[in-house]
Image 1 (spheres, rainbow, N blue to C red):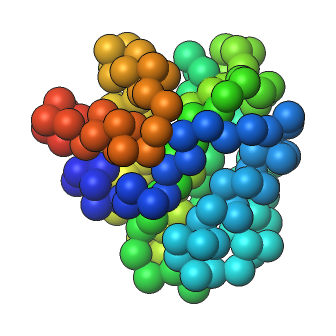
Image 2: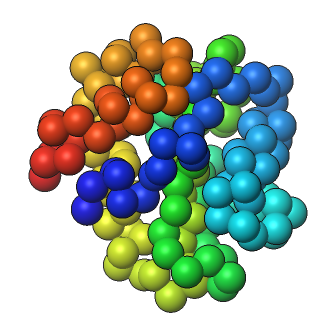
Length: 154
């Protein structure tokens, strides 16, 4: 599963400004609503509910908030690079500056887990993360996320 299958270039926010985790999730929900056509409030409620179970901040400044929605037909993502990191209650207590929001249909099961695993694998690559952090536009971030190594990482 390539990240290009989950993320379209118009779903990338290269310089997001947010002052808190809640504001960040609201901005992501707004972008996801524009990309998917689903209600922003519904998306926000689902990802906020998931965060209440435990932070999706995985460490090294990266978070992968996610949720399942009845109304969505295919797995979809939104990626954001923050101008200033925010406290995300991450596992390593480090503030977050790279966020990949993943939304999946209610019955996606294994595909949802495969997509989460794929995203985590790509964002675990220190070289990849450095390139993304150095990029300041959606085109270059999209290119980083979809380059050969990101597509073929096992």
